[in-house]
Image (cartoon, rainbow, N blue to C red; front, side, top):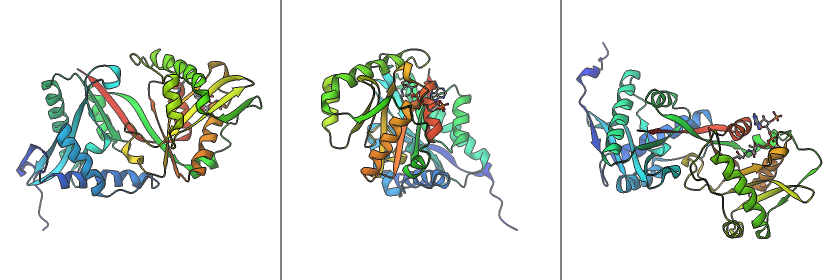
Length: 333
Ligand SMILES: CC(C)(COP(=O)(O)OP(=O)(O)OC[C@H]1O[C@@H](n2cnc3c(N)ncnc32)[C@H](O)[C@@H]1OP(=O)(O)O)[C@@H](O)C(=O)NCCC(=O)NCCS
């Protein structure tokens, strides 16, 4: 007769994972296994080893807090957070990146649920104890049970991180090309004023309903000029004769892009805007095609993007072309 695993008999407790903890390696392994589960769905995401996660989780033990569910001497799940002074322009907030929550694949569904609940409960308690009243958490897109749990507990979706292999984007090049009147060209430092003006309109869009981001700001002309001089940046402007009607920009994945796609083979889009009168006629699709050509020239294989889920135009646009890798949620309390 095979042995019966009696969950009631297990010795479980939440344990702090501090710098140098014996559980650091186990946490890195769980994070890597979660990445591997996502890779089963999206085989094109960069490969990872536990060593890729170890320095991040170690950083979190020093800059924030990490804790796990200790289960008979092993870690069955872990999570953590660090505090961002001005979280999405709304004051101090605790943030849990998508590489900082993972559960053992061997847990039964009910044990997994309890583990999830206990860890989030503990995390919320710790945040409130530190005087923080916002918690943001990013979750890998295949973690649907975690997402459901968060929604039951009052979290709302705020951000989508998505990506697509360049080969797929190139295949979909029928991407709704815009009519003949729109011309595209690479933006140069001399375009900084034009880009800053379009960026101000993008900030206005993000500040208005339904996104309503507090105090949104675009880059100033000086910032654009400096940004465009960096070797790994690329921006394209769309013109109707001499009128600039839109732009797109991209660079290496920055700190706010899901770690899932951090790789030298990824080009990360981090801004796009089209004047209202030029929308729904393929202008943004043409800008995306330009970025794909740029990615190919730079030897990239993956293109990524992130957007507010509360931004309906952007969300619909990116979901048409990209696959969701990570969803971010927020709760205020
Ligand atoms: C998002 C944005 C750049 C899209 O520009 P666009 O030129 O209208 O996009 P396209 O015409 O190339 O749209 C291609 C497809 O995306 C989807 N899409 C774009 N806008 C959409 C909308 N408002 N509602 C639903 N689907 C939309 C559609 O599938 C569309 O194809 P279709 O027109 O054949 O149905 C534009 O709406 C915009 O500038 N929004 C404000 C700024 C912003 O949110 N920027 C993104 C920040 S991440």
